[in-house]
Structure formats: structure tokens, C-alpha cells
Image 1 (cartoon, chains in turn yellow, orange):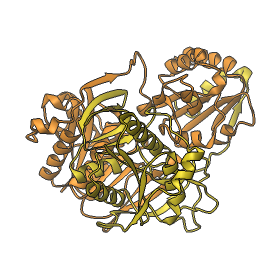
Image 2: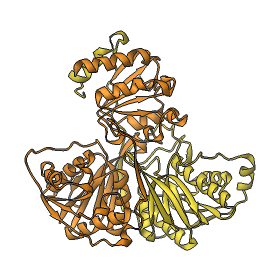
Image 3: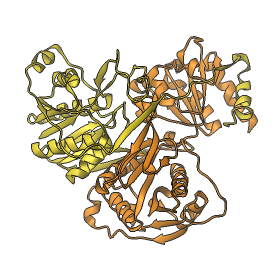
Image 4: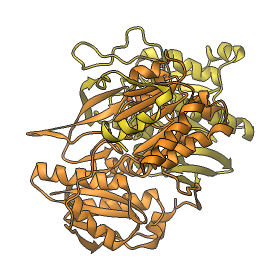
Length: 246
Length: 325
């Protein structure tokens, strides 16, 4: 089984988001970048399934410029066998999907996994686009993934419940908790990651279909109105008569 | 040319988020000088579909194929794509739900359309320039995105726009067939398992949410959260540490790596307010924080606050709500 795991390079979850003075770009200064937390489920589950089968490969794919390589190496340290970096800024979901589809097709991957969405763009789009470009099923968002031969059984989250879905390879799934416990690299992994292959390839396909004109931060709160704990019922009156939300 | 709205139904009812989407689509149609047509998916009821006239929908297409009751990605995509071609729709509007995102992303490739998800406002249309505002950085920011090309798909975030109600207006319900074959249902679910929702409210669609953190000290104390939620008609939620230790299920985890909610009222009980949690809730209209630590960072993001012990305060609040009703 050949697994292709797509990872994004995103600001750490503790990052306070700021923008350049013209609000056109995210301000990267002093920001720590990590593997997108949702993608960690995809990566760890692919490694677990490969280990359980006792054969197969896990290739990690990133669309990004050279500054993403430390996180690609981290994915190799966690247990991926090799990596591909498409040397281009991930300008929008469509552009990224085109790169993944081209590599998935060329490498004849059986299972294409990624996180539910990236925590920076929050598109929740790439999985469906890749599936459609390749003409194969997509299961998103998947909470559970098991393989038996060429058949996968997945649990797909729906509003208020879940669906049990079976698909044959090749397929795309976007992953989320509680699929597995994401692994962290150990020392041996870090040492071997240095020499694992990382191939850099140029981008293909059409340009992005969407562009960001401007970023904005949410409006600041006016300040908290404190109610005495002894008189907590007062809060309910305020919620009804002042805020008018109950 | 028209605007096509995808309306999700369950148990015969149009979902609340789809009423918002219908209203959004009708307003976009008005901006563009055209009309809005809806395509229904899921288990629909014709009388309820006709009522979409109240949201400004002129016509509703409905395929009564029974296998469309449950979500099937390929079949839904083909159904909506066929409707979009028939109606020559330039704009397709759907909910930013698990169904909307799964179908919208496939449709964007099939129909060569540009796609924006998580959209929170009506578009700005100026000549050929079509701009939408969407949530980014997991609730920590917004971005204005320019959609290029002839065709556009917009997935509207739940609870971010209000559904209009023009009482008494009706839409024409027309039967529609996308000539779906067995092959289109190859990825149909084997089984659908719904959570037990006895009197409960679904978190993603909820207008009011009562949420608990580690300050609740253990799952055995959750009846305090549930009692207040029940009195308010609210959904229950929790912070990441709480779902990580399995006090509550993962689907209740609100935050940057859980779900992002934007209810009218969010009541946080015993949650300190880490930046990752705030990201998931800061588009809520009114935030109430109850915490015994006056220095909890959540108070800076709150509209109302009580510095006190949740075990004292919650029963008082529940009693006060019951006294009101």
C-alpha cells in the first residue's frame, strides 16, 4: 500500500495573529511554524497502517517554499519514508489540489490522506478537489480509518452523528480526532530523517482562482461587565433585557 | 443566469443553517438583478420546501429519489451540478457544513468555479470584482477574498447571517431528476449512526452554548452544565483539555483544533481562555465567563463575567432562568 500524506506548514496554535501594515499579508516575524495539527492525524494513522500491514510506504507531500523543510524533516522523523516538496507558495486551495493530484497520479498512490483543514486558511476544500480531479471518492472529515486489503472502512462525521463508509483504493480522506494519538519524533527518528530522500519538484497546472485582498482582525470587546457572584441571577436579567439573547 | 441555493433537509425539515443560506442566496440574487432557485437534498417535505418563499426563494427543485435521503458525495455532487447547468447558475450558495464543504469542493472542480468557504457576510460586487469576507486563522482573523472567473461557489458559515422571514410568501416546488444511476451511489454510507439527542441541541447549529472546562473538576459534575443548557435551550460544549481526557466526547470540543462556533450566547464555565479556545468562540455575539480566578484571560474577551465558584454560580443561574420562563 502506498500512502501519500499531505502536510501544511502553519503558525503554531499559540500564535497571536498580526498582519503587515497594509493588511495584505500575514506577519511571519517571530512566528513558530508547525505541521498543521489536523495533518498529524493523517501522518500518524498512515504510519500505523503501514506498520500493521508490515509493508508499504508513506510519502509526505508539502506545497511550499524552502522554509517549510524543517517541518518536512519532522514528518520524516515521525516515521514517513520519503518526502516531496512542490516548490511554490500554496496560493489557494485549488492550486494546492492541482499539485497533489498531479503527484498522486504520477506516483500511483493508493491512499491520499490529509488533515480536515489547515488552521490558517481553514478552507476544508483540498480533499474534495483532489478527489474530483482524480475521479476517486473522498471521505471527509474522517474520524476513523481501518484497512483490510484494498478496502477501507471509515467513520465520517456528520452534523449530529456519523456515517460508516466503505471505499476501495484509491481514495482521499481528510482526517481529524479521534483517529489516532499523533506521534512525536524520537531521537532515532530524528537521526534517520536527515538522510531520508526529500525531492523538490516544480509546480504544475493553472494559477490560483482566488486571491486575498485584505486581512482584518475581529473587533475588540468593549470590556467586561462584572456581576457579583452572590447576585448571579442578575446576569440572567441582563441577558434578557440588555443583551436580548435569551 | 440565476443563483442556485443548496438546501439541506433532515426529517422533512429545512435545517436552520439552510434557511440562512436560502436568505443569503436570495439577497445575492437581488444584488445581481436575478432570482434564486433552491435545490433540496436530504429527506425533504414539499410543504416545508414551499415555505422557502419566506426567505426569498422563487423556485425549489426536488428530486424524490429515496437514496438521496442520506449524504452520498458523488450523487449529491451530480445532482447539484445538473441543477446548476439547467438553471445556468453563476453563483452557487451552500452551508459551510460537512455536507456543504464536501460537495462544494468537488463541484468547484467539476463546474470550473472559484470557491470560498467559511463566508460570513454578503459579497461586495463592483463591476467584475466579486469579493467575500471569510473567517481565517481558525477564528483569529478575517480575510477579504476576490473570486475570479465566471462561476462562483460560496459556503456560508452557520449563524453568521440572519435568515429573513417574509411571512406567507411561497416558492414553487418543481420535481427534478438528475438521472442518477447505481454508480452514483457507490460511496453511499453502509450505516448512519445518530447521537442520542433527547431534548438536546446540536452544537454547530446552536444559538446558545453552555461550555465547561477543567474548572468543572470531573465529568460527574457535568449535570450543572446540562441543567443550565436545558433551561436555556442551549447546546453543551467543552474545552480541549476536557475532551482530551475523555470527560466529554470530541465533537463537543470547541477551539482552534475542534469546532468554531458563533452562537448568540456563549457561557464559559471554569475555562481559563487559552488563545486556542478563544479562536473557536470569539465570533459569538455575547460571551459570558464564570471563573473563580479574576485574572483568567477569558474575562478580557467577555461581555459579562462572574468571578466566583462555578459550583455555586451555575445552580443560581439555572434557577434564575427557570424563574423567568
